[in-house]
Image 1 (cartoon, rainbow, N blue to C red):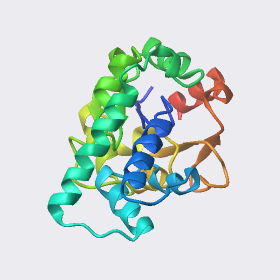
Image 2: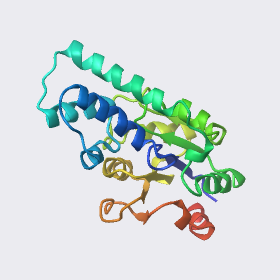
Image 3: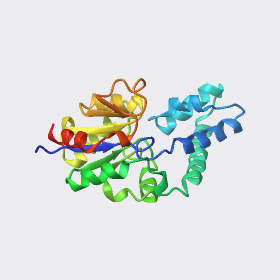
Image 4: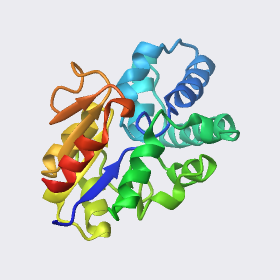
Length: 218
């Protein structure tokens, strides 16, 4: 069997932290004098914090000096960290542990590839950190998805060629990044939105052992 690596995004794939990001961005928007909706929050999937703030300010038609911009990025993250402080295993999305256990039992190297700068503490809180052989997050990359940098670094860390990696993503930018890296892209979520993925599932409950075994043999 050829060596193959599995790479997981964090938000919306392993845990649902989007709701906490939304609360933090909404709080900032309200403080700046405008509303921020859940529909608008969909634009933030798979996007760096810096770009999210740029989009938020565009929505509110707010301009800022660099000093203000940097301060608002810090404020948002402080609020977000307060919201996730009490996360535990109950926040892990359905059947994610089953899939991770299957890969570990088959000695498959696993990496995280996320734009989040809080990936490690979140994985610690939900008791999944030991599953990952490499954590590549917003602290390790200079280019945001759809640039494939985060996944290419993850593959290198796992010692696996990029074209032998499988990526689980819930965002269009993430799927595009995986495809750009010539990896097998698996969309988790709405198939219409994630139409560029090679495979698509609503969630991990739809991913059975036969499918995973097929990936390992491919």
